[in-house]
Image (cartoon, rainbow over all chains, first blue to last red; front, top):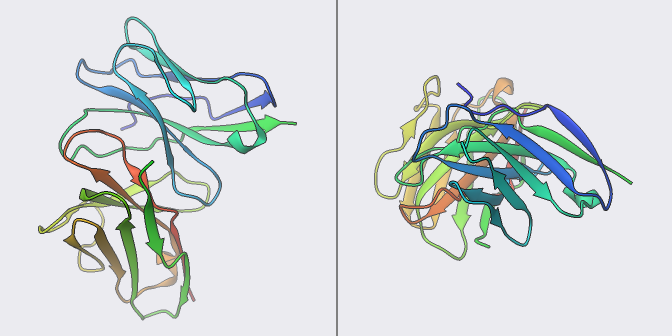
Length: 111
Length: 116
């Protein structure tokens, strides 16, 4: 069963910030929020992850609500190369914990 | 970031033959590797989890005798599709996780298998 809910598709203008929402209302206290993306016909790429604090790296920012029931991935200045399917996944951070991919959000960057 | 390679990137084989796909972690040791399958316009589906030196753990519905997984070293796992049939045609992707902690998995570029 999917633990996350994402919109199936989104468009964003090139150069603008892309904000991708994810609902994970059943997340438990020791579960992290992970984001991956998959560009067409390639393997998924790790983007960012967080537990409860907001996180930022060279690719994106992750904003997690205080109740941790939802989060937003922000690509600050979207480019055409950011067109991909983005997956939000929750899970624990140890052992053989496996990733369960949902259907993700197909983000299309419009020139 | 960590790099995972797969070989071959594409393979076409005849029905009834076997195909081996290699997954290598190039700059780190992977205690755990995962194998996924992805059909067109579908999400990734986990097939099995393999740990170096032990038997793979298969997901429900995945035939272990058909999809043989060997994780002989900390940098190499192989998936062999035995007696392949056209319905096995798919995009096979491996991933590797360095160490026992950390949820970051690094994915290979995938192998496109076509069975004729």
